Length: 248
Image 1 (cartoon, rainbow, N blue to C red):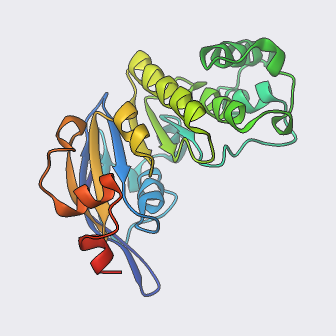
Image 2: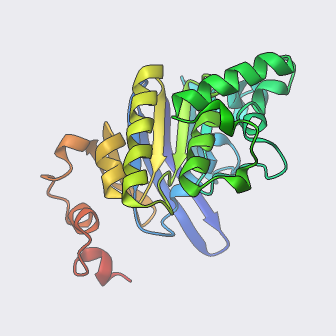
C-alpha cells in the first residue's frame, strides 16, 4: 500500500535518511524500530508529506504522495501522537470529534458527539469522561483518548508514534492490546515507531530496523528473534556491546 524507494533527507550536514527502501503491505501492521535520532519520526513525516524528501519516491496505492491532493490524501490517515497532542481547551469528546466537525464533509455537532462517545467506548472509556478536559485525565486515559481520535474517521491507515511512552508496564500492555485489536478489527494498514520491544511483539506483523539512515533489516516479526543481523540482535536484546556501540 505504501512504498518508499531510495528516500533521502538531509538537514544541514546531518544525513538522516540515506536511501530508504521499504514496503508496507495493505492491511498489515509494520513496526519501525531503531535508536533515538535515527530518523524514525522523519520517516513518518516524509510519508505524510509534512517533510519533503531530497530524493527518492514515496507512493500510496501507486500514486506519488508529493503529487496527491492534500485534503483527500490526509483524510486516509489517522495518527496517535507520542505526547497525545490533545487540545487542552477542548473537552474530551471534542478532541475525539475534531476532524469530524471540520471541512466540507463536517458532521452536525450531535452526530459527531455520538461517534466520539462510541469511539471512547471502544477504547474502554465511559461517557462520563466525554465532558472532562484532558488535564483531568491520567496519562493512560489521555493515550486512549488519542487512540479514539485516531480512529474516529475510520481511516484506512493509522500511524502510531511511540504509543506507550511514559506509561507503566501494565498500561503499556493495555494500549498495545487495544491497538492490535482495533487495527485487526478495522482491517487498517498500520505503521508504528517505538523503542518498546513489548509493543513490537504485541503490535507487529512485520518489523523494520532503521539504522545509519537505511533499513538495516526487515521481515516478519516471527523471524526477528532468529535473524542473523548483528545490529538487529544487539538492539532487540539491549546489549551494550555490538556493532551499534562501535560506531558511536
